[in-house]
Length: 23
Image (tube, rainbow, N blue to C red):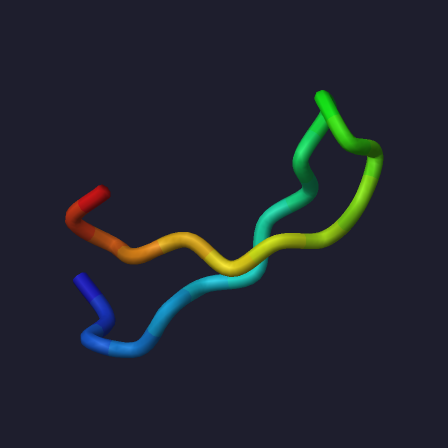
């Protein structure tokens, strides 16, 4: 898994958010 945060689309807020790989 990448050590850097990945950008994912949050369907709840309809915006792009950063999530930690281990989250």
